[in-house]
Amino acid sequence: MTPKALKGVTKPLSDAGFTATHASLRDALRAFIAPDAQIHMCHPFGDLSGSDAWFTHCFAPLMEAMPDLERRELITVAGTTSANDNWVGICGNYLGTFSRPFLGLLPTGRIAHMRFHEFYRIENDAVAEIQAIWDIPELMMTAGQWPMAPQLGDRFLTPSPMTQDGLLAVDVFPGQGRAAQAHVIAMLTDMCRHPSEGGPEVMNLERYWHPHFNWYGPAGIGTSRGIKGFRDWHQIPFLRAMPDRALDPEGLVSHWVAQGDYVCETGWPNMRQTLSVGGWLGLPPTGLKIELRSLDFWHLQDGLIRENWVLVDLMHVYHQLGVDVLERASEFNKARGL
Image 1 (cartoon, rainbow, N blue to C red):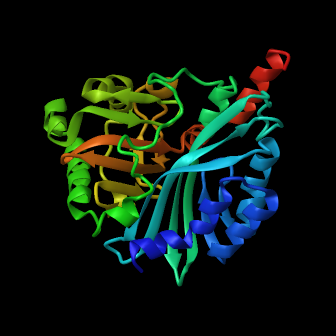
Image 2 (image 1 turned 120 degrees about the vertical axis):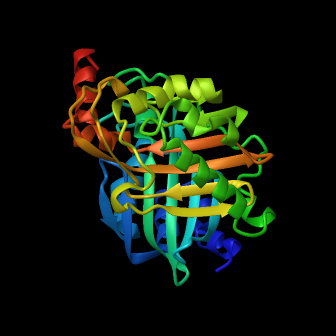
């Protein structure tokens, strides 16, 4: 299938998300998701099967909490991977008035938002698999109910690409973006050389990243700008805590799609690392090997990475370490008399 045809498969959800109702969203999901589709959702939702389960366990509670829910897409990238699988990656924001409880979080009566990265594998003109992260920590922060360590990076509503063509990539850019994808994979390969092969210089960051790049990290880590900001507010504490990182370690599989200057990648999981030193996210050095699900989008300008949207399922990270973030938030709200 062509990238444009792949994008067309997910169009019912794109259209329904503008002014979603329970009926329109349920019908939209049924229209393009196979009845037995495998759905891998972020913690605490877990694995589901079929569109009705996705709607019942995820969308219906969200729409109950935000009756005026909007689904605003920022980037769509579609194509065929090296394994000949067809994928569509979509980055965007859910937002609405937080009017009723959601996952035990208390409503604020104010506008609230959370970013989403959703990847759809398509077979026979229908979605056969979904890998999706909703940035629930972002919703908790906008509601003033984040009970964990403060993030180092900044927090704001994640923007669309600076060139404002994130939704046009499939239509405007011909081909599969091979040069952009090769650039990103080379960057990650070099990045994984540190610290095992030497100091920060072995990563050759200036070779890959634009001097003014923005790194839009998940809530809990936050957003940073430029190499110094990226290193200070994310990479240094991340690598100090888990120095044994590697690209697709121990047989983990990543799925890559590129279109023009846009690249996206998903894996469930696509990282496996040992939390051997304390400090990252305020966590102690447990010595446990944890899995990380990271769904990423990159945007290149003049052959360098100008923007990088990253979501990591941090709720799943805490869960692997025995921390129930939502229960902790509930206890915090009780202590505040809420």
